[in-house]
Image (cartoon, rainbow, N blue to C red; front, side):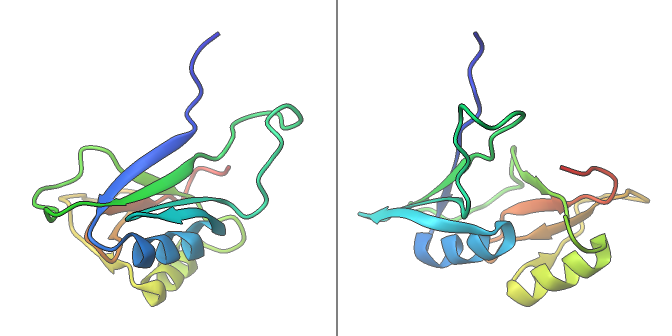
Length: 128
């Protein structure tokens, strides 16, 4: 049996604030919060044995003293489920995301950054 992707850890300056942003983006909720570490999970946590297909990973946001200085080597891609890509980008920007130019040309995705500057993409052609 292979490993299962269950969690993504994100270093940040303010775990509580960044957790609130990602909860609003992904429809997640706080599972645990202590000592500068916040773990968020899907609002409707699936039963691993009953759910076919991929399981959404938890995000763990941990406070670190250093700030982000370069482009992320790993990033999150999100897919709007009930609106157009353009409408989702507008919604995410209202939550605090910012548009960023990473050198993309005529791509089908839009690159944004979360409130702490971590890049993520809003896809247009993939559907969960």
